[in-house]
Length: 154
View 1 (cartoon, rainbow, N blue to C red):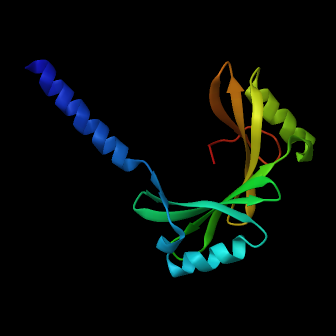
View 2 (cartoon, helix red, strand yellow):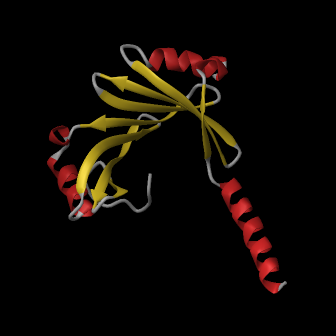
């Protein structure tokens, strides 16, 4: 009986912990609020739209448009009023400043960098994020716009 009680407490704790994290779900364009749709029209000029997501985190609903622009990915996150809050855009390694490339490679260690994105929040470049493949395992590393380690994840 003691074990069953512990399992029940653990299950409730996991459910509560899970509700604190963002829950992203794919949605149709028709489900976007009018203000978000207006921003999507502006942001997707010259792009191919790959899909939309809706995410609720800390009680705030955010929308994301997944775009393909000139062969690279660009994800635009907006609040329910259509204000752009974050843009993640794929960047080629050759286009990175030398310090950023060196910083990402140092954090990736022996891993292979498979994709790099710039992260812009409120129209300000805040970080670069690289997807890394190390012995079959995927991970992400970030550095600041200057290539130096960040105090916290963006």
